[in-house]
Image 1 (tube, rainbow, N blue to C red):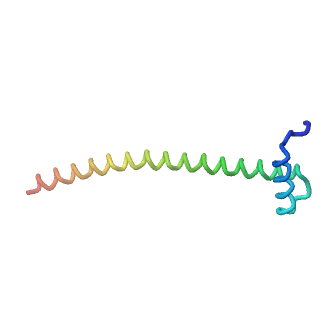
Image 2 (cartoon, rainbow, N blue to C red):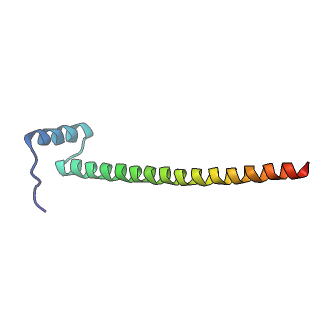
Image 3 (cartoon, rainbow, N blue to C red):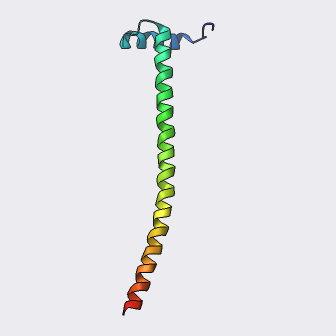
Length: 80
């Protein structure tokens, strides 16, 4: 694969990060950035899946609680 065209500002950012992170090559900086972005994306995807699961379970729990509460009220009335 060939070189990637970047602006002068981006070139300076890559070089600054390379030095700050003590990564020997500019390609290493880009590899690290890609790895970080993939990790963040995977974490966000997991957060969304967990949030959706919690939402579904909360709705089911509310229904179950309502059904149990109605059944309990019915028993109390019939025990009198």
